[in-house]
Image (cartoon, rainbow, N blue to C red; front, top):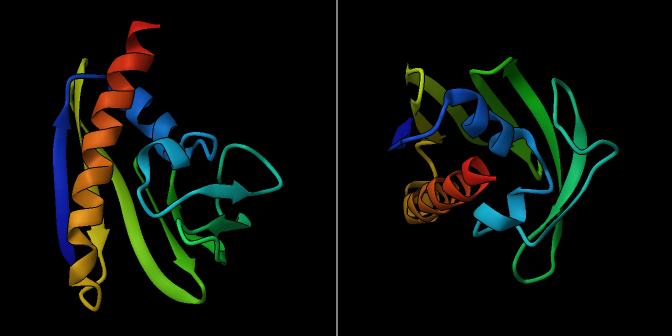
Amino acid sequence: MLIEALELDVPAALAWRLLIDTDEWPRWGPSVRAVDVPQRLIGPGLRGRVQTPVGLWLAFEITAWQTERTWSWRVAGLPATGHEVLPLDAGRCQVRFLIPSWAPLYRPVCRRALQRIAARAQVVSRG
């Protein structure tokens, strides 16, 4: 398992919300153009589809879940990234992507996603 992580100057609850809100995914996810799901906020066992930047739709399923802490998924039937939020104090947290060892070339995509999450978190925290 490979890890990309970034500390954010926002509460963990805000970072978690950005990670589970499918309306936010295209804003911070370089590999997500659109999302098709039965509900906006993901949860355990949720199934849906994500559209890649080239227009291809891929099925996904949330396969692991710990509320306000971590979630993982399978995309196109393959184990994909895990997503974690670690509270550091009341106003800071660390967001981590757990990248399968078979996907080392996905690290720069995750690094960019973390940067976008940090920027989006600042916008959302200001209201």
